[in-house]
Length: 60
Image (cartoon, rainbow, N blue to C red):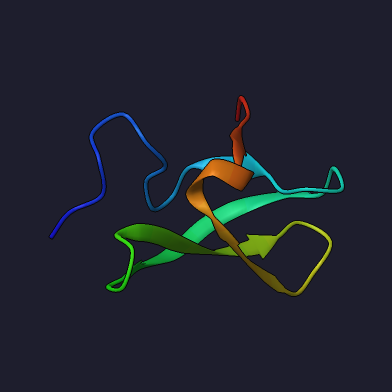
């Protein structure tokens, strides 16, 4: 199963809740409800995981 078209993609730059920014490096499906979970490599170091609706695309 693939994420919905027009949503977040691997490699895309995003802003996570709290204003931190980074690049999407992985995605996984939550089988119980069909939502997508994304792993973001943050610009200031570290990783974060968020649901697709929590992420906001930003310009590169």
